[in-house]
Amino acid sequence: MYTSGSTGEPKGCIITHESFICAAAGIILILNVKDEAPRILNFMPLAHMFDCSTIVIATSMGGEIGFWQGNTNKLINEFNDFKPNLLTIWLPIAIF
Image (cartoon, rainbow, N blue to C red; front, side, top):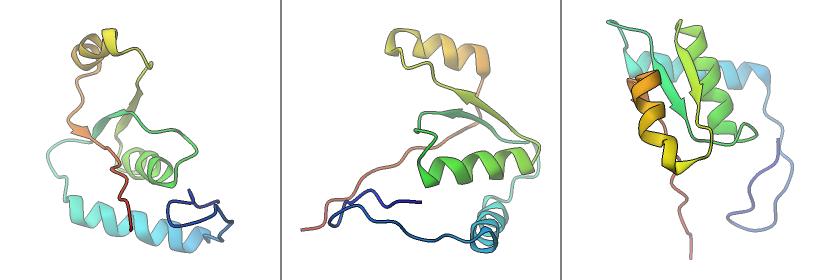
């Protein structure tokens, strides 16, 4: 996995399977979803670590992932068709 370079130059970093799964398991506990499995409309690039974990978490909970087609004119239709019950976004933070 490579960092985005938001605090400097992009660089490679090792993320073990164990640490990835442990982090995902912790997020599942925090979400505490009991009534229905998550239906997430995905806006993130698939190469992003946050997106990878979102897909693993949702599918391990029996959830579904819908992928945004990239056309803002069709976004309302995508919400109506897929009916997500959870949205994920990533907000970049600038460090000065």
